[in-house]
Image (cartoon, rainbow, N blue to C red; front, top):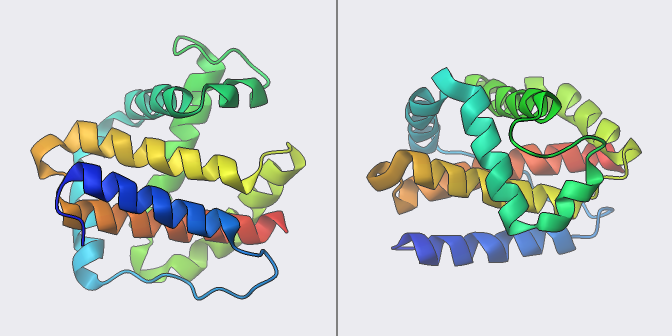
Length: 173
């Protein structure tokens, strides 16, 4: 178990690396969320859902700090005052919101997340890029939730992002 945010981040980076290295032909067990983790995620989401556009832009600024080269994969200017980036950032956050709303029935999201994976694959987006998005999302939540971002919160959000990313990855194959 991680005990401080730095430990949690390192543990998360290792987990994301392991996910990225998985052979896409292997059948991997789908991560699962406990009832407590679902409650944590829902509670945290209430703290950010009223401002999805701004939170999304903040997340993308984190993303471009984590991996500046990702700016190049977007077909539009990636400055935070760009309307297209704002729309994309809001859409990403709405997708996370759908996952939060459907934590008890994530299988209902499988089709739409698979299609989203297919869409990104057609745009030459690699699964590894999602790892940086996950890191940016976790960093954003950490910054926004501040002292409420505990190791348990970190683990819950890491797991839900892993579920989203792996489901999208299945659509990329």
